[in-house]
Image (cartoon, rainbow, N blue to C red; front, side):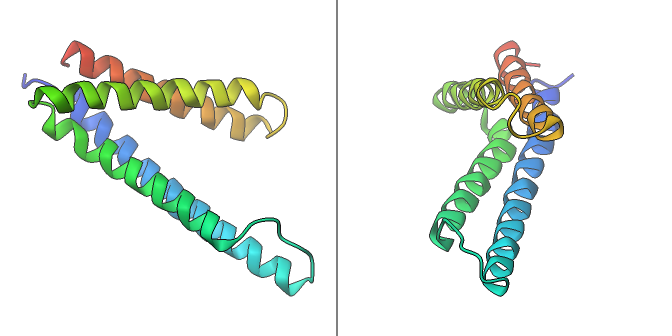
Amino acid sequence: MEEYTYTKILGAIVGMMTILIAVGFSILSFIGMGLSKAFNTGNDYSPSLIIFVFLLLFILGIVTGYGPFRLNHKAWYYIYIGLCLALGIGCVLAFIISLGSLGVKNELSILCIGMIYILLGFLVKRKK
């Protein structure tokens, strides 16, 4: 089997999921802002914050999806492992911090995303 086969498959899937999450988050946030103006209730954040979060998630999705195809470069290998482990550990810590406040479905999705990113970093390290 070719080197990094499972990493390429999982990286492409997780990258697409992250891009879809970015698009879904931004659409739902803009809908919520529009409804808050329609019902004359206040919103606590500006559209620039939504655009910043969208761009951040979109770039992370592109890097996650495109990264496994460039792992033959030594510097990118270490950057990608660090990125995957940092995102994975960050999501698991966010799950622990938000335990009981976001609802079971949202918390479990954050935990699953974190574990998938940690698995992706592990697969890169093992060259699978």
